Length: 308
Image (cartoon, rainbow, N blue to C red):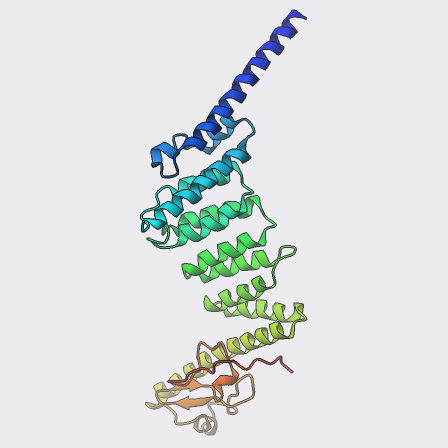
């Protein structure tokens, strides 16, 4: 009985001391000036150690660090920017203490990526931060959206498409993510993946404008492939004959083609000087990367109509 009381007394003493330590820690962090140096603000730089010391007050401590993060960035930005050396450590501690603090990921992804003096210019850390966010908030499609745009900013279209696609598969996600997934894949040169996703977009929506947009992108993919194949054939003709053909009719008459090639709208492709293959009505085929006549200026409003 006496031993049990001693154990209870010791445990109570430890609990009181720990709570006092946690309160002191929270108070000291909250008293750090907004313009503190790296050493002042991060005098405890280990998120794991901070978790142990704050005794369950991780959320409160995360809020304090998050407030300091915003104040630090705002102060530096108003002074003309700089290296923002504190930004990643502060965001890392904030999100480690509270992995569900979504604004920290959105803010961090934007300003870690932005080039100096507007941000830290560290897209690698931005990706690491937002990936940690997706791991701890797997049903939040906005984080996949943010991650995809970081990749897009780095011209990493393949990973951007993957992030958009993963986000598009979540419950209650925005349909725009599926559209962007296909567009990123197309920009990255992965035409088969782009065709698959644009086709899925067309099949899974009842919105006529989204269907028209998907149809236009599918046509653009087809034109890109057609033009590539036709220009290779024209180059083969030149290699064989020593000159470019004047028209596709000439190639048909010589047996190189079965008929005049047609674009997805059933208009004939045309040959320009130097063996360039172009579409006949470029304003009817938005989103083209290839097949545009030299000097063509796209119309202000592309003509989008669902396939028949």
